[in-house]
Every structure is written in structure tokens, then in C-alpha cells.
Image 1: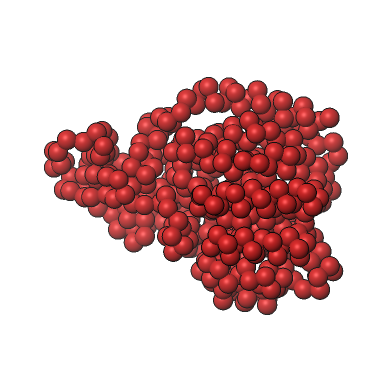
Image 2: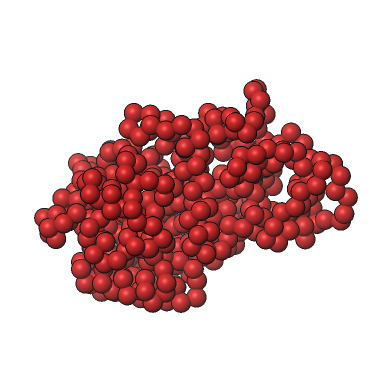
Length: 420
């Protein structure tokens, strides 16, 4: 049934044009009528007087598998560098995930994304001892909440040839019936043989890769010492960069020639400022990368409005941009989805913002409001693919309380397993 957003202040997310309207949400589309004039029968009416309505958000890079990590104890060894952060924290966590933990990680992540206004998530999953059907489990979890997705499994040689092959097999199986990507961990855990097999899957399923690139200098150093080339050129040798579906995550420690190579290619880069700060690996700089840059969370949280602010404020010292440029990075993910023919981000994905600004909101300054004002607390209602999935800050599609109670139990079990 149609949904009426009555007397809304609608913001076109591309042009930033603002208009007052009754917005009627139908499957796959929205229609506009003069404010307070639409009187046809609809399934639900939401009073949006004084509220901003705009297209919902997209998480450009997420790690749902990390959802049960919040508040966990210190690792067995205090990490002294980025490699040890992976070894003693994230690779310890992902090895101990069970299928049920994967499911609840997906559920709590999807709920958090929805409540922060995101209705589409590009996720990068890892559970090396629970690989089989893990992507299907995640997909069903996201679907139950009502959040669209583009999933992949993080293929890696770090746990041996057998597990690497299981990751390839899971990817092949999932992409046979779902939209998704070929997930790869990072250059320093991927052999040429595995990259060759991954390139075959990309061709077979007309997909792209989703890989961490030069997040830390170790990744770049390993590539040069082992393969006598930089990561960007290594990936290009396998044909991964000449693909508009390919996603390169982080891209902090790039040479000028890599920046030129990536900037002149159709692939995409995802900036994850909060994660970079947390891991102390460096700062993003868009020099030479041109326009195909979108924002992610890297599993740190599920709040894209927070990611916008972080990229803007931290960028003032390392990658200066205007509020409008930061806003455009937030919205570039829609362009990635649409140009590559992925489904789940049609016009009937909307967010209602209860934002009572003390200053005028205009087409000329709305980007400034996103940078300095609008935040997750203002997300009141969320419509995903024509369905109301958040109403007055509450998820409507699943029982939040039951899911969160169960996730707390599973988190304790996971932490105990990690401590053994």
C-alpha cells in the first residue's frame, strides 16, 4: 500500500532543491502534490509538518561481522602495529564466529543502519571457520529488517589454502543467485593463484572486487618486496581496476602513479575516516583520485551522517573540502549503485528528519546543515523500498528487544571463545 508523507519539506538529494509537498510513496517511485491536498486512500499517512524528507543513505563499506565486538576485553597481546591489530583482534574475532553469531551480527547491524537512515549496505564479511552459507545468512538478516545489500565474502590466504578455497566457493555459490561482489581481504594475504581464481569469478558473474588497499604502509611494503610492484599496479595486472563495480577501500598509502592509475579508471574508492583514526594508520587524501569516492564506516559504527562529519572535519588538515563536497561523497554511493545496475536504491527509499533548525534551511546551505547540524538523532522515520521500516525511531519489521537481548548473550560467548 502507498504511504503519504503529508506536508513534507522535500529535499532532492542530487540537486538539493527544496519544496513543500505531499509526497506519495509507491513501489519504486514517489509522486508530489501540493501541500495538504492529497486525499486519496493510502495504506499509511505520516504527518511531516516541519520535517525534512530526503533520499535515505548508503553505507559504502561495512563489516557486520564486527557487530558483537563493542565493549569486549583487551586482546591477549597489546598490538604494537596494524598487523598485530588484525592478528590479535579482528582475525581472532572472525575465527570464533558461529553461524548464529553471523546471523545476529547481521540483524543488529541492519537495525543500526536503518535507525541511522541507511537503507542500503555494502558489506565485507569474514568468518573463516563458518564460511558455508554465511552470505545467505547475512542476506536473510538484512532482508528481515528491510535493508538492501551488496555482500561479499573476504577471501584470503591467511588461514591456508583450504579456507581460501572455501571463500571462493561461497562467493561462487552466493553470486549465482544474488547481486554481490567478489570480496578480497588485502594484497598482503592474497597469492597470485587466489587472485587469478578471484578474477575468474569476477568474469563468471559479471561482478567486481571489494578489497582493502594500502590501509597501512605494511600492505604496500609487502607487495613491493614480494611482487616488485605497488598494490594498485598489482590489482591492475589482474584487470580489477578497469571495472566500475570494483571497490578499493581506504587507499591511504598510494604512490602518485597509483593515484593516476586509479583516478583514470572506472573503479571506486571508499573513505573510512573513523576507522583510520582508530587504527592510527594515516589520513585519507583524494589527490589524483578524481570523483569516484564514497564514504563508509568500516564496521566502526553504522552512522553515515557521522562518517560525513568525520571526513569533513579531519579532512580540513589532510584533504580540505567544502561541506558540499563532503555531502557529495556521502551521496556518491547512489551513483555507484545506479551506474552498475544494482537494485535496492530506488526513489521509494526515504528518510524523515525531525530537524528543528535555529537557522534557515535553503538549497544553498543545506550541505552546511548536514556538516554542522543534522545527525542520527534527527532520523525519525525510514522508508525502504516503499516499506516503513523505522517509525518514530523504532524498527517496525523485527523485534529489537528480543534481538538485542540475544545478541548480548552471543557476544559474551564470543568473547569467552576469543579469550581461550
